[in-house]
Length: 227
Image 1: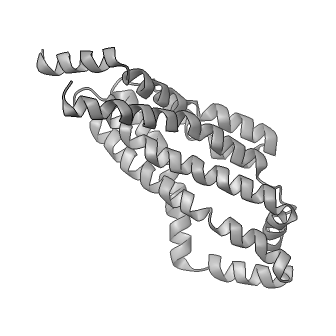
Image 2 (image 1 turned 120 degrees about the horizontal axis):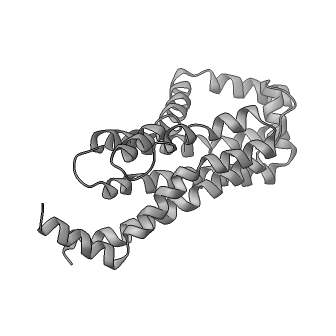
Image 3 (image 1 turned 45 degrees about the vertical axis):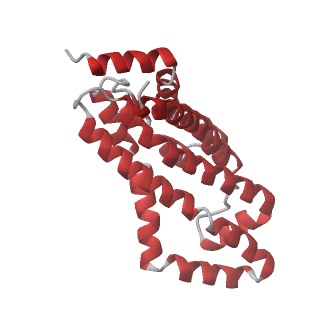
């Protein structure tokens, strides 16, 4: 076994496990996300402050779920054989990983927004919140997280589908989790979202399967004896 193959075995195992586990954490984050009475800043802050412990549980689950996505998606490039789908997959990996990093970082604000209404009057907390969220750089951070972390996962799946690693059905399905969570009742939306994350689980399983010694050996033989 050469150095590249030796390195790819633990890489695939870690990445595969990350992509299998990530949907469970994101599902838990959605399931424990506190309900809001309305869409106002006061309503959002009050919902986080109402049960600070649950709010932080949700924030932790979301944060580490996105961390696992960021750690797992680069290894999907090791599933490709030949040039087919490589450009799409590479773009999807880079943009999805960047977006996942942006999304995980955004969760830090939940510690502060959840604590503020219990430390100062709600109106004052809302004023601070509105001032911070009005900053253009924060708006760009949030937008890039949503755009790249969520919307670029279908690009990643399209590259893998073109390469024959997964089916084309994964492309629209992976786009739906946050849509489902936004338009459906909380528990139902979270369950549907979990089902929609199945493409990530599938890719994780493929990575775990490709980490087997027999598969690595077959890849070495194929590389040393190109058709």
